[in-house]
Image (cartoon, rainbow, N blue to C red; front, side):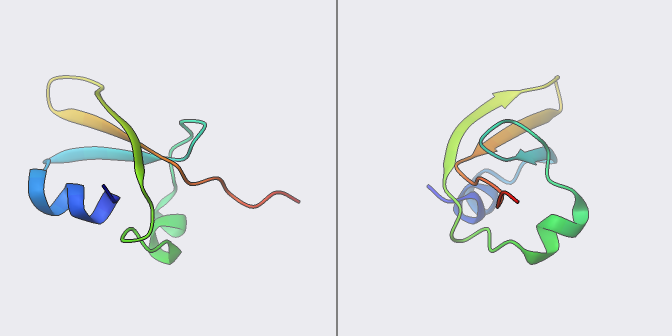
Length: 62
């Protein structure tokens, strides 16, 4: 399932989207990423209201 599909079906109130290494994406990165093309590896709860969406995305290296 892609991140976009998950957000449309589950409609979480608070969420953090991370890369493969669980590093959160900045707002600037999220502006340029196409969430319809990024698959989810894992979803877990951070606290009672927030979930963390770990994706299969790996940022480009130097």
